[in-house]
Length: 232
Image (cartoon, rainbow, N blue to C red; front, side, top):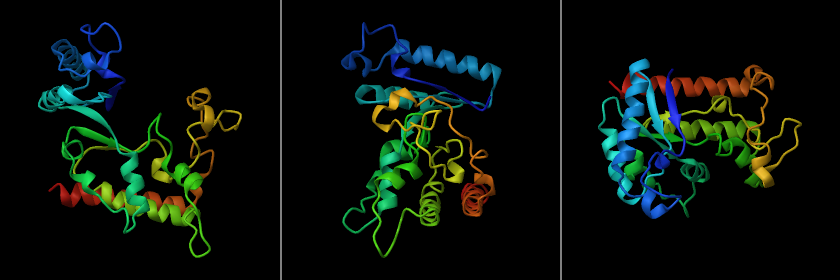
């Protein structure tokens, strides 16, 4: 395996009676020991694999995050970055504060960054739905959106923290995560169809789309720059 992600890892404890944030957010030694045991077992089977936690670390539990970052092969912490991608995408003089890029969780190399997931809406879809076009510039055209996405990845992929690219995100996948298998859209009741099977990029002929193919080539170039030059 390449990696194994554990959902809701803050609840890997026998020390709290129920979902009590005051208890859950404390440093809990039994939770740390349990997670390390899981990591050791995973690495005994697949030594080079990544261990990833959906840890939602706050307050005293940041001590756990620091401890995990120093443990053997590193235990990575899931880090949502959707809002920051939006901020980069919307860039304007009134709201151009990128100070979040210096925040501890982004520069800590055991935080794994993601902008799309099973629970986070597709970036391209979100922009298609919520952005407004004007007569001078239509951001919602596929070409304009993909060009903006290239610029976003050029910024984010070259900053030294681990990142996750969700399946077909590298081709600008733009169908909602709440699309039902019968093609009904349930964004208002997302729990109904979120886990329904979605069309693959190949079913949608994305791999034959020249604009999406060029987007993929750009991402490949950026990643190679990161590997071949920046990490030397």
